[in-house]
Structures are given as C-alpha cells and as structure tokens.
Image (tube, rainbow over the protein chains, first blue to last red):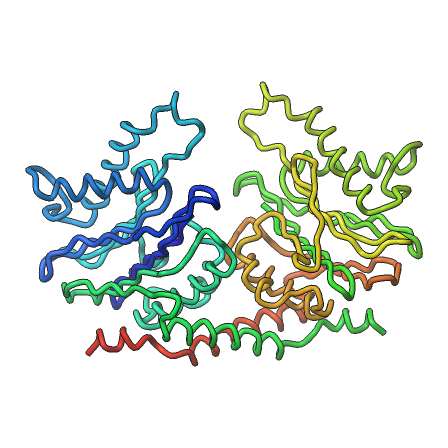
Length: 246
Length: 246
C-alpha cells in the first residue's frame, strides 16, 4: 500500500508521500512516490501516486519520455487543469495497454495520482486524478486530498488543517498523520518525502527526505505520543462506570 | 457502515458499537448492533455485528429463536469457543440460503461478528467470527478486535490499550476512538452502545447508551480535542522548513 497527502493552502502547497510498496507482505520494497516536473521561475508540477506500481511507473515514464517530443507534455501545458487531464489520459492509455480483462487474474491495475503545482498566470492548484482518469480539484472548503492508506491519518488532519493553516503547521500535522499511519499499518513505511512550496515563489523545489533517524521527526513523534498520553490521563473517567464499581 | 470494538482485558471485557446503518447515503437508519445473551450468575455472551444487515439480523434472529428449541444454542453451549462456532455455523446457514450467486447483483452479503463473554468454568474469552464463518480468538498480545470502519479509531487504541489496561481507561479510550471515527466518517454515528463486564462477576449486563447530549461523552470529546490542539501547538516546527523561509 501507500500513503500520500497533498494540501492546497493559502500560503502554498504541501506534498508528502511514504516510500513503501508491497505485493503481499513477502514482497516489500522502497520506491519514491513523488515526481517533480519544474522550470524554476515558470512552473512547478508535483505528482504523488498510489496503487498498482506497474501502472503508475508506466504513467510517469511516458510523461517523462514525452517531455522531449512534439505535442502536449507537462512542461508545455498552459494550466494545471491541462496537466491533470494529461495525467488522466495517460492512465487510460496505460490501462488500455496493460489491463487485458481476460488476463488480469483479478489484479487491480488501478493507479491514483495527486497532481498539484503552479504555472505562471495561475494560482496554486491541486487535483486528485482517479484510477478512471477523471479528476477533482481541491478548494477552500476541501483543501487537502489523501490517496492510499488514508484513514488512520485522517482524524488529526481533519482536526487541524484548514485553507488558512500555515505551511509550517501543515507540515507538522502531516508528519504526525504519517506517524499514526505507520504505527497502525505495516504497508506504509519510512522514509517520507515531503515538499513545501510557497505560493507565487516559483522557487526550485526542495523536497526533504525524512528517515527513521531524522531528529526532528523523532522529536515530533515522541512529543506527540507523550502529549497524547498526558491529555488522555487527565481526562475524567465515566461516572456511570464508577457507579458500576460501587 | 459500522464501527464496533471489543476488548478482552485482565480486568474484564469491553464491548462498544455505533448504531448507524446505511445503504448508500440516502438510506441511513439506526439499529442496535449489540446483542446480549445472559443468565446472571452462569453466563454472559455478547455479540457485536457489522456488514450486511439482512445477514446479521437473520443470524441473530435464528440464534434467538433456537434458544427455546432442542439442540445446541447460546444458552447451553458449554464454552465460548462453542458459542463462536455456533455463530459461524449460523452465518454459513444464512448465506447458503440468501446469497444466491446468480441473483446477488454484486451485493456483499457478508456479516462479521465479535463474540465475547464468560461462561462458568472458563475465563473471559473474545472471538472475531469472519464472514466466512471461521474465527480467531483474542490473546494477551492482541487483546482487542475491531469490525467495520476500524481504521480511523485504531491509532489511539494502539497507543493506549494493552491487556493490563483497566476497564475504566479502556472505556475512555474507546469513546475517544469512536469520536475520531464519527468525525471522519459519515457512515458511523451516535448513539454508542457500550458494555463493561468485570471478569468473574457474572453480574447482569448493564449496557450504557451514549447519545449526542451525554455530558460525559461531550466533556471527553471537548477535552480531547482541546488537549490535542494544545499538544500540537507546543510541538516544534521543522528546522529545515525555517531555513527554507530565510
């Protein structure tokens, strides 16, 4: 499995992905799930992917390969919307080639992508491209998308993140969300790739790789765990239960 | 969907279930998912169910109906293991009757049960009976089971609950786990039914129904939410991010 989160906040964009892939528990490997297409000063497009690795790798390879050809590609699409549409079209192309119904043996060939960034002339935008190739866009009301093993880490994001949350706070919340997911689900694992982009900066992307011995991440997970236990300990016990004891 | 949790702790047993069922978002109803079979002083058997409501209701109706007939039933099985086996057998019976492959229209007829309690001569025991009718038993290493929408509420239980956790602490943790789940998933809803049983007491079951205006539950969810935000606010921000700003 996989866990990826992307956020479109007033301050800018956040992208984060784990790096574990598994086909059953006996075939676990590490793959980067964050792909950056950029021309500093002009455009940044970031892809996060989950789902069938053969499908998502093929989609990314084709998107890369075509940068050097004629026709539409991620470095010349005029808008993020067109970028999402191109990713969706490439998913359908790969599935049409690989997902031979008579041969699929019940394998799920589906791949999901989060596609976000900024192109000169536009605000920051973020899209969730479904396995079917269609897509939705993040808004002020729904400023974040998750793909993969999203449920364990959703409650903390729901409690903290709104469109006006700062990038720094969102990064903190995202790493805690990954910590909760990694604790509860073997199929999500370190390292975490995280990329923060300040709206309008068109700065060169500086993704960070968070490993198990990252001092900040360890301080965060320790502080969060201890903090939770303290809050929990201070909360009262049920009156009806105390009565039951007497 | 549904969310149910059961725990087998040194101190005794905990059972909790939400009460929302839905077939699509346009057909939401409230059903109790906790069923108690008891003879105070001799036995307590509690069932929690998730999955296809037609299947789980039929299983419970048949188990109830047969209490008054000859043959094996939940009030005369000698062990909890036999109770779990009987529930599993009844699931298979209902599926054999209802889940006509040619007519199923892709509907999932599966139903899951958590079966726990105590029968004179045995310790407390807890089983997870799968939709296929087979089952596993909780142990000191794995003292709790969840069925239904289990992922949102799993991280807090993983952080707090071990076999030697007190029933009162476990009840607190369980209600917080439900709060997180209800916030993040529309298909799980109040009221919550919760039942605590002290090992060896063979006392009459006193399930509690936690509604939206339950003062304890509201104090708990408020205290937890505020506590989390405080802990979160006190945690440091990433150095690498601060550098990025400068």
